[in-house]
Length: 142
Image (tube, rainbow, N blue to C red):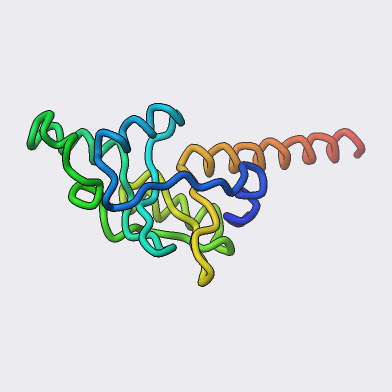
């Protein structure tokens, strides 16, 4: 069970922003797309992650003025990433240890996708349910 399998099931579209994007605009994008985070891209590379958590921290520290800053000023950097060959369980473990909910999937040729902890848990549950169904079918045959 690799990240590649998860991307195959959910798609590889990556919605991103640049470090120069105004936080207010990035927040509008998160709301419009109903997502919790986006990778921050510069010259085809992931330089950080902008998430709901960054918005909350900015609002707590600077109030509404934080909405007029750039994403580069408030993003979480450097980004923690995974490769498409990494296992789902390794990615879940990494997310738990580092207390993050989103991971860009990168390889030498750039960003291949973006996965959330919800994507990985959903995939893992589907795999466990399929294994349980196969076990039930096997037991019924015996």
